Every structure is written in C-alpha cells, then in structure tokens.
Image (cartoon, rainbow, N blue to C red; front, side, top):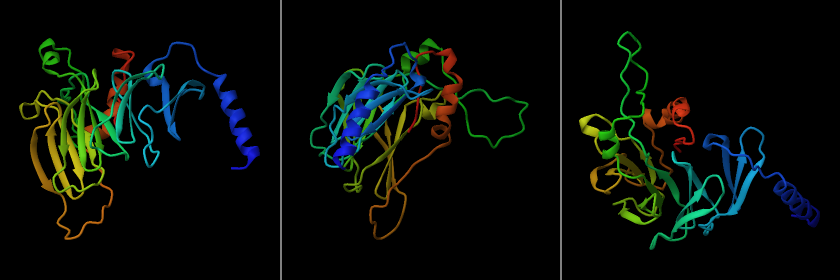
Amino acid sequence: MTKSREKQALCDEREDSMTNVQAPLKGDEILVAAINVKIYAVRKKDGARIWKAEAPTGGGSSGIISLFITDEDKLIVGGGGRTACMNLFTGETIWLNKMPDCGYGEVGVIATTSRILPPRAQNALRTDDTLPPSYEESSSRHQQQQQSSPAVISCTAGKCVSIDMATGHQLWEFPCPKGGWYIPVALIEPVSAESHSSEQKVYVACGKWIYCLQARSGILEWSRPVSNMAQFFGSPVTLATAWSSRLAAETHSAYSQFPGSLVEES
C-alpha cells in the first residue's frame, strides 16, 4: 500500500469513528464483520458504525476470525486457537477461553440454543408433505427446565471443544478419531419433544468421518465414515439438515414474540 493510500485509510478510519450509533438497538438490527483481527458492528439499515474492537482471540497464524451471534445477543468469536464471548451491543469482552493444546489456527464457532424448539403441529388440511419440518418455541415450564444452559462448540485442528456460555469454562473436549488435523465442521440440532431427540445433538464432520455427540455432555452416540475413499487429501466438508437450513427464517418469524433475541445459524 502506498503512503497516500495509507493516509486515506487512516482518514477513513477517523471519519468512520465519528458515526458511532448511540440509540438503543435490537440484536437483529446489527451486522458484525471481522477484518484484519478487528471486529466492527454496524447498523444494518445504513451501515453506521456501532462499535469497533480488537478481536480478543487474536488472529493466530492465519488472521481469520469466525463469528456467531447467539439467541441471547452474545457475539462468539473464534480465532488463533481461542474462543471469546463479547457483548453484541458494546463490543465488551465477557470471557476468553484459551483452549489449551489446541494450537493457534482457525477456530469455527457455533452455539446451542437457550430455548427448546419442539416440532410444531402441522396443519392436518395441508396436502403438501414435502416441506421441511418447522419449529416453534415451547412455553412449558417443564420443558424449559429440561433445557441446559447454552454451550459454545469450538472446532479447530481435529478437535471440538465445548464451552459454557455463561462462564467461559470448558465443558468437554472431543479429539475426532481418525479425523486428523483437519478443521471439524459442527452442526447443532434443537432439543425436540420427540422421545428419540430429548438431548441436544452436535453433528461433527472431520476428514472422512461424521460424529454425533450430546451437546452438553460430549457423550459420543455414534460415528461413521461418510466416504470409503482409500486416500483422502483434506477436501473441505460441509453439513446440512432441513432444520438448520431453515433456522434463521423460522426464528426471525417468531422474533416479535421474543424481542431482543435472535438465533442465527452458520
């Protein structure tokens, strides 16, 4: 970068800092971006900056920062072999977990939900049975008591680490057997009213393998190779379910009933 461009970048930085938003906002009004180990929160309707902060995790060897916004308006940050939790509205660091023995590489982050989302009763008159399942929040006190406090799932270097959302303390660590040093991919399913899904699940893909774990305890329910290739060269793995693919739309439609919180699945 030339000196003139560096000077222009500094001017832009100062100019942006003058546009900080002071008015109260809701979680679904905020867009967060991570650039060069800095995190920026902006208002979605016009891009006005709300706050700027250094990533508390650092960027490690790659400088890549991953982000996840929970349904309790907390910002989870992963990078440099660490995981952090920040206040979505102020950028203040709530906790930092250094994830011992997990290296200094990229960290993928996701979080369990804070409320139970049982399957919604389907309209008996509807003839289209090809639509994916939809969910609604439960107001049952008994079901709410069954739901454990949320947890963050951090994935890096062939391992998954579960961290308590409230305290930042590690709950469990799962070294993916036969997963090598690839970065695992995690997908979370909700707690369901159905008997076979009473525990919140985490599905993890790493290398050629897929694992199913209980989200809060880390107990392995099953593991299977998804491919029988004799040689594996570390191609990226992705996961999807009908529920996870529809999560953002389903939760946003119910947002007016629960102001101040929004689930966003990545």
